[in-house]
Image 1 (cartoon, rainbow, N blue to C red):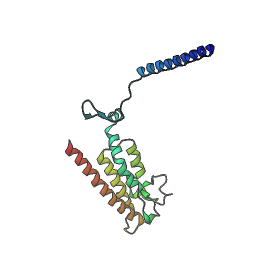
Image 2 (image 1 turned 180 degrees about the vertical axis):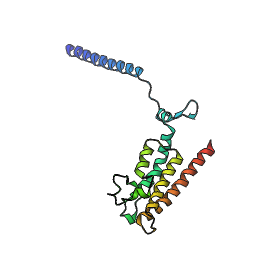
Image 3 (image 1 turned 90 degrees about the horizontal axis):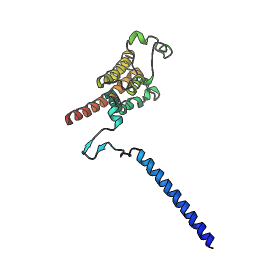
Image 4 (image 1 turned 45 degrees about the vertical axis):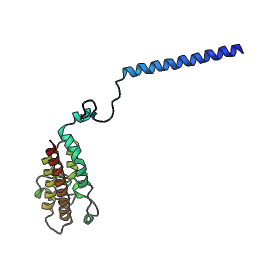
Length: 184
């Protein structure tokens, strides 16, 4: 019985020593790691908002793109019933494919093509200022109206519908910018 008690005491001491070693290793690791900061952007000591590191490194063009993306997405997601619920503004028409797209004379009429795919690419790259974004959307709509000048043409009707939605979105974007300017 005495041997069992001694054996049990030795086993308890070994387990205790292993736990102590694990705690010491854990403490040593914790001391080497920088402390985890809360995931919000506030500076509690100074009572002010401080942008996180990612936001400080973000360029003005990328911030604007991030702001514009939900508005752009509404234009991208539009579907037109007269065109079998498709959005022709997503399609890239260039010199290599205009004949295949059924518009062989497209570049006789349109000198500077524009489409939602190119606008999206520029947004993702943070290449826009606000005016440039507006200019590209307006150019895309103007191109469609110019090329499809017959008011009964389904693409012409789609362009008018796109322009109406775009104007509403533009008003909303401008009102947000004015409110931000008033706060400064």
